[in-house]
Amino acid sequence: GLGTQALRDVDVAAHCRPQPALGRIEGWIQNAVIAGEDQRFFEHPGYELDAWVAAFKANQRDGEPLQGASTITQQLAKLLYTGDARAPARKLREWLYAVEMERTLGKGRILQLYLAVLPWGDGICGAEAAARHRLGKSAHQLKPREAAWLASLLVNPDQQLRRWARDEEAARERTAAVLKGIKRLPRERREAELDALVSWRPPVGRQAR
Image (cartoon, rainbow, N blue to C red; front, side):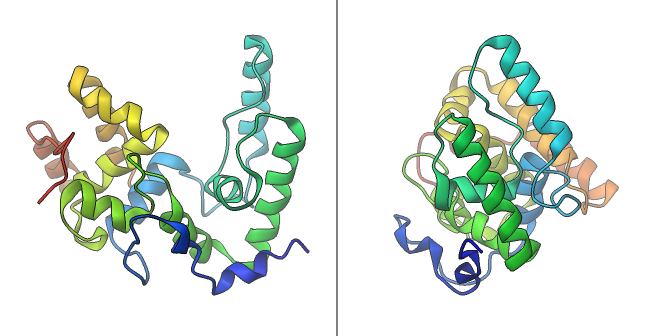
């Protein structure tokens, strides 16, 4: 074993600044992060071989080190254990930790740990801190479009925030794509949220009050 069972009870968010509120992270933010980061999260064993092979072939063509195709479990392994060096040995360790976490922790705990330690730009760590800092409310209070917007930042938080300032239409499309991917959102509610997103604008560049 790799010792991942120790994560069952540990407060992994203790190193985050500012400190997030303790407790389970609930609400649409869970579904939005899955929609934006790993739509097959509840179906795969911690990795997706087909996606990895496709990413490997693309990286080989571009002459770049292996990157991309990481599941939520793999990204959590990277955040907690392996770092993000672009090397085959590091990627192999990431896979091993991901498989072990799936076995010892289960999907629910993995998702909660991921939401607790995710970097959200500007030094913000974790979904609760991000929701309070960006939108002035707790994560469980977020509307679907607000949760989708926060999740849309995760591809590169600082870059995506700048994108809202210079190319709002493209940034809004990214948020809409996440919103459309939220599986548990009823169709009528989804359509209403997408309609509201057309004129909704996040408080980019300042802390919400």
